[in-house]
Image (cartoon, rainbow, N blue to C red):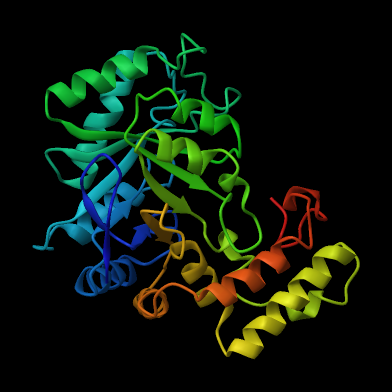
Length: 318
């Protein structure tokens, strides 16, 4: 497993990192989670991402990493705890951090991210919306000075609003989810350039669109109720390319994301050891060739609209 520098943090992180969204007790048995985490560390994965909103993922990670001796980098987030959560309450923000430390069994957090900083309807973080400051930035500065957190970050899902927060210059890392993958590349427009301008580390979330690119859906290619005609033609072209190259769709997706040198690491969301091994094996084959990337650019350009315009309920809608 190769490492990349996580922007201005200077941290060396594995190209493939472990997302904890499925590592919670109501989804994955603890033994399976422990096997997956331990195998990931054995294979060189050193970056683990979680959040209070991912059920008891912090607790499970804490239990799984308790007996891991290799150095690992932990990222968690602010938001969603306790309930109701007030993003302007400094005591509540500090309390959430203290709970994260207890859950993870650690005395510090490597990267603490503001969760959903780009959607006011979810969390109204900013007292000053022009400069993206407020009680949360005050607490983050205090926690950094106290050594409780090492670096700060942003974790969002919007394609353009997140870039404005990135440009504030207050944060070290940005995690953008759902907006950079084989067929959905909105992050290229503003988020990635803004992160480069601020020398921030870039974490890609959901490189396989939480299932849309994790496996093939050939049965939908002739179903007009499931997908629009342009999208069906696009997926047919993508699947044909997989067949031509003799490469699985998930491998193509992971290697595409990591072919971009602007990306520091991309998250995988495994539920067991086998999925960890498959993802690591794919990434270790390295970046895609220029010819393959050019073919993928052509396929991407076949559909100019966002997947939210697909029929609700299809695996390509969110």
